[in-house]
Image (cartoon, rainbow, N blue to C red; front, side, top):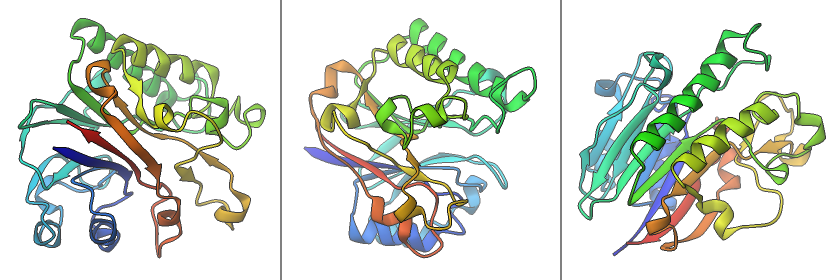
Length: 262
């Protein structure tokens, strides 16, 4: 039975509850993975989500920042979490479908503004987080798994509006791109979005700082869907819902979708 999965950095699930409901109503993914929920788990507003058929949730939360949640129409069970780099942040949670597929929802640290760990603790935390992910995948190679989330790195030249201009900007620096590639290779993860859309500029994030994000179009592809090789061929239909970035009081991220025939 196929299912459609979406990942979206919502930038406060309580503030943007109406946008989550709108996405559920208009696009109806079977599974919706949210990052930056900024809420303790018990305060996530579930009533309207459940009314729309999202009766299952696995989540980890914190007051005011971070937080990840997997909302599902399909039955899921809690498959644990990992505190990468021992930051004490709610940045990872996993859920298992009845067919055994495990979904990992990740929110990699943004890394601050200065791409130098000696000057910027947050940048070092980001690199350490990715290194710990790499080591975890090497120690226990994932199978029948999907990893989604705001990974806060645009790895390819066509994942940013201007490759040369962003080489020294956090999210596209060579050291970050290499750390992400090391983690991806350690788990043998397949970038499902680029498997389906191999060529061309592709973005999922546009800064709030841009007065006219749509016409300026200075985007980056920070949000990703990966799958292990044993199920990656079952993925198709990848798309980024750019129009969602233009909804009222939006997140600065757009949802990324993929369908899996599993």
